[in-house]
Length: 289
Image (cartoon, rainbow, N blue to C red; front, side, top):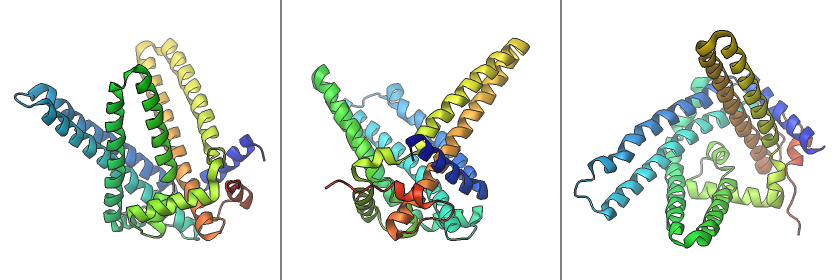
């Protein structure tokens, strides 16, 4: 199975799960909305020091700003993790032959609220550390800064890969953040290894979907603008933006569903319902000795 065929199969199978549990999109939308609201609320305190810095020293301002950065990272991580837990639990129940309602999944996430908060603290701490390092390399000169930013980028990518199974582990096993991280890293090392990038699959279809949606949105906006002037322009931009948002939410949920199916296979060696053995087993290519 070539890369495009595999990506298409993964997308279709993930979408089939979403079609059976459409509330998954509501969780993604709520995550987007609450993250947006939270981000807007954090903008005011983030610019406050520039307005009322008064007698504060540079060191005091830096501490204040780092505290705001940490709180921002924590809040966004908490919101994203909470609703990802909702999505993962819904998928889990579906894979086990059940049908979780919106309320069932929300209540389950609430039952894991402590673990979600603990994981969000760890995630925010790593994010803050990377931000501090990013600021530190700015004093290394141009070459040093470029090299430093590349290293920090690789560290961020490694963190993203190492934590890919954390939410399914929170849902399935209820482990704490450190144990979840360790188990996630172990699963990644033992199954995907050096082929992880090739094994994702959904990324290719996501790219094509964005290209199509953006092209269609631009075409529609031009058409409406020619027909209805400024009003048409506004309507076209609104429709295009809505389609882009829906596409992003759809593939975000599909990615979470697929990751959950991969975890089921990695943890239990069982192919999740609605997924084919070829697609799931093909994602697991052992590391070369």
